[in-house]
Length: 382
Ligand code: TRP
Image (cartoon, rainbow, N blue to C red; front, side):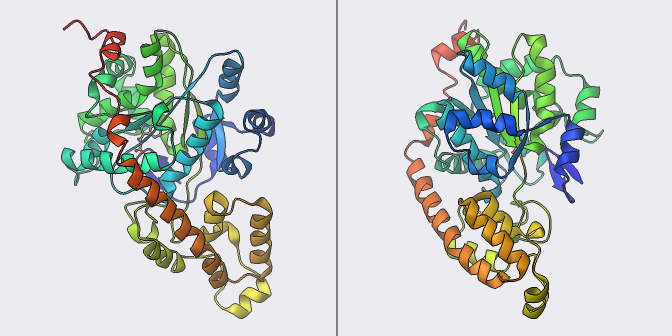
């Protein structure tokens, strides 16, 4: 298994990842604690989609003591947005609603330009705008959500970025990110830019503000850098919650925009998405007769995981799908046919919200010229 910010492949063992990365499991006692704030637990918590964390207990202690935290997550605009990207965003919206939290959402157009030979800076900036519509369509409160384009809003992050960068040696960055002799120097500096939003609210507020980062676990290396630098700069270490990857429609592997035939995009016409799903790999048997006799395997089946991650909110119904799949009562064709209208409905609604986002998106980007912000950053002198 390979899990880095720029590559996820192989069969992923999440317990081993937690061990390797040194993160903590989301225990029942922590889940019970979260339940106190939101009533029912979010679907992704009940089902272990978010499964690991760092310092969540500390963060909740701070919250209980009256210190509000901010949320921080992001998107590398390298192409269209898939359902896989949307998973942690929907969870972040739940956190925003539950804790009435401000959200910083970073668009790393610099990163994607630097790592992708085929993308120009103009391409990634255009994708920042397009993807921002998808971000807002996840349902964030525009009044409490601040989008940051690394390129367009560089001034907002750069000062914090260089402060972080001074505390990260080449040898640490190389060990954490696997940089090579052939890596360009832009990407060597980039981790400092991704660390910067962790501390942005503290800079603006002029006092330490706790930060929680909900994100897929492949982003963890960045938070190691940020957490190392934090005490040296006088900030709190950012807390994290980590999620699993939504599988692609093929056999094994996460949903990835670089493999469009096995990915469902938020912008896919619903009928196209439905067709892709109908052609998906499943955990079924070679023949109907065999499946009736031996049952199928939901645990290797993307169709089952789509229900689990997103499309079947009712736990009892999900358990019934799991049971009838394993017993051979549910055939893959039938299962796909019942999932299709759920996908169509989801995409129709998403695309409607995406259209509406066009009216507000430009106001959601942070204003790097804002006088107050410039003052907080010590940049107002000239
Ligand atoms: N590097 C991330 C990506 O390629 C984008 C990103 C920036 C991000 N800041 C983040 C993701 C914070 C999660 C949390 O997708």
